[in-house]
Image (cartoon, rainbow, N blue to C red; front, side, top):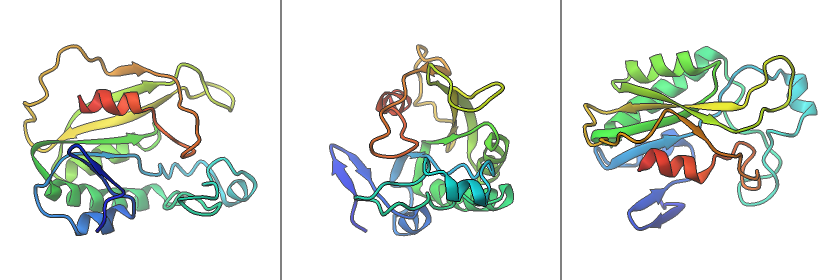
Length: 189
């Protein structure tokens, strides 16, 4: 499989996660960082037809189509993420790390799923976007990122990082749910 990006010890693959993972060798990955579709069952079929905010624009990644797997039930999401977590554990070196963005509705599902696949849950990181989104009631202004490890992970010895990171949203020019590079850099440091 050809990487989407490769330079300076960083390799990124673009494709179906299970298909990509099946082609990689055991214990060759230091860190897994993923942002799966949350399948939060927050949108019904009528909403999906009428709203375009979760569609990808024409261009490099497709033509005005929905983000794959975003229509799963909680059980379907759990099954998919367990398959991926088991495969990622196989790929990850001992004491490697697993990060996965998730919304508040699916965090309990993801945490149990990742733990049942053999990972050790280490923390829950919070990305505070600094301003809340659309909607009513208590409006969301944060996303969550589960952090787990393959083993003890005593290679993570920093004492200067809190679990809440306040960063503005990036311009959504590449992806409708794009995450800030600074958050990823901090998590990987």
